[in-house]
Image 1 (cartoon, rainbow, N blue to C red):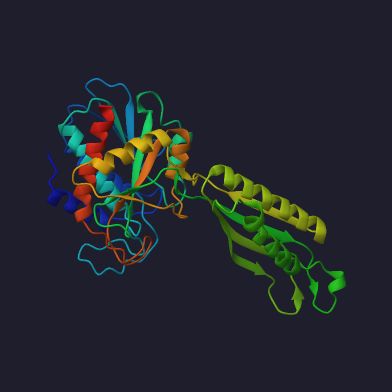
Image 2 (image 1 turned 60 degrees about the horizontal axis):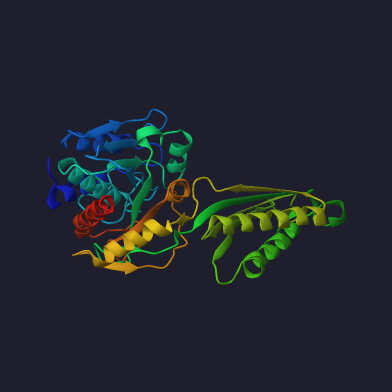
Length: 382
């Protein structure tokens, strides 16, 4: 079966109607498997790991393999109620492909379909990954030992759609494409009491205020201003009523950084501040940092240079060099384990990613497939 542009759009629209949340992508998995099994199977091998049941691996056996080139696509959706009004809108209430993973999957299927009909020189590994938006499926797959033996890529590639780029354009950059992210939870544990007798209590709201102000100095005074980092403390809750001193206050936030080294430095400074506040206010300050698999997407210098050089000269490809983004992507964890490159595919939309009205231009799909298959063939001949 050879997929036409019309077939690809039909696949994308079906996927768009069946969005599922992280680690629950059973219907999506079944549909992907059905499509893959409709391809020529002469040199395909399909794997459904029990360790990560909604994931799907497809190996394309090369004619004279010198390496295994990996390609990853994410398959989960977001807890967003769709408001596009499209005839093929989500059929699952409260869940939507608001990040465009339906586009990602369709492009991956298009590339896989091409190489099922045109046997590649090298082995190709396609990884249909669950749980990108939460629960870091890439890290789970790695730690479950799924990338071993013939299923281990020598290099890894993947895309993310971008509504700010023209439909079908390819965007990339040397260095970091996406920031890494860390969830921050801080619990301050003091002693509650009557508002009229502060001497008999230990006020966690006052301590939290001091902590928040000190955290504002981390980026401005501990991070090189040429580089970028963000700490946002977006939620605070302390106390129950106006005339009772709060014995517990909780702060929740997020850290973003363009390199793993930077994130670890921010983590360290935040740890120091929490310990200092605890000593200063004579209370317990418990800090929880959860990065999971959301490491910075740091592109391999050598492979990314080859990718950019190819896309700049490839016929029919509109290449755009892009700036780094502070959004997170769990492909960063895999790129810390395997050299590779992540890039953008333009989908030209007024709505942003994670929006209930995101409507990517479907004309991007076939152009993306053509650009990636061309790159892979050039890479195998290099």
